[in-house]
Image (cartoon, rainbow, N blue to C red; front, side):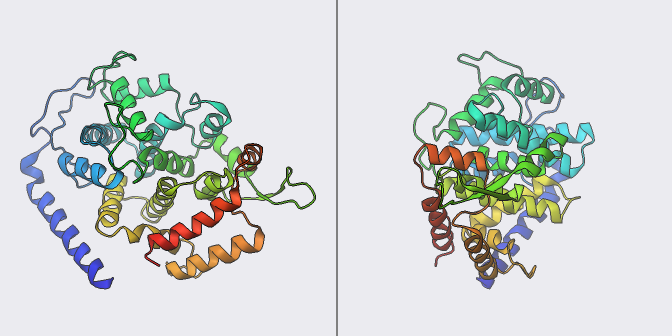
Amino acid sequence: RQQGEQQAARLEDKIRRLHTLDQTTRNLYQNATPQSGNGMGLGDLAAGGMSKTDMAEMFENEYGMSKEQAEQLAEFTIRFHAYAKEQGWNSQQEAYEYACIIGSIGYGPDSGGDGGKLWGIAANTMSHDQLISMLAAIGYPKGKKDNPKIGTAEYFINDMLLFHQGKDEHEKILKHPAKVDFVHEMASLAAMLNTDPKSALYHEGTSIFIPNPLNPKMPVKLPSNYREAATWGGDIASGSMDADDLHADMDAINLQQRLTEHPSQDPMKILNDYNRRVEHDPRRRADEFLGNYDPTGGHDPDKGMAWLKGTAGAQSFLPPGDVALGLDALRKGLDPAKTYRFFFQTLDRERGR
């Protein structure tokens, strides 16, 4: 494992030095096509130390997107990165705004039901009309909602929504639809990074629910941690989690931890560096996730796993989640306890145990 990490570090160092070497000659307009809005050409403009081409390959390989979807997201990422610099946003705000835009595509307040409303409060996600306005500010023409043209805001939103649904731009099932749902991942990250006052109400009001032997339909409420409620805890409490959900949850926790530990670092670089490492060794995702729960602070994944199992098991059969999700799961006849077991079984499998 140590040898693999050293090889990964050497590869990253080579990539970083190559990008630094050609940065000045590449400039902002290499292979650029003039765009409306911020007036910047895209081409191979680097965002977070990665070219547009390399970024698209990363999105395709790591997240299972179609080639076109990956290219669309890479182009958006570069446009957004430039827009964030123009706005003078610090790294934390840039990270939140990016996550919020992508997350809003699948989890906006108008996405339907109580779930959409909760995401609107927790992550301050945007409605469809707000998304269109934001993308217009970044430089996208609006486009028609029905049959939009490529390069427009409506087309980008539709492309990412189809990916979120496991489909390509032609509405055919993706070759690798269960890799990682980037839209889900970003929505969870936005909830954790959100500093809006409304979000504090969600954080304070979140509860875990534990089985009540006297009345199974009315579980007992206990305080919860919003970070877990926004990710794996909420998914387990809902009684519905698959490997795709868990990957997105782990990535969101890992990225939030990295952003917290490096508040002044370029968030796009943090995203790119993390994905490079996971792409090189997929086991790093689960190990890093569990390491974040090591009570000694040593990032030991085995100690993190032991702490999670011990703490969750001592409290209940269910980890932190939202009580509303739990009640809804019970009404639908879903089994959060089964999802809870799936959570730990999948973590062991991801680590090769």
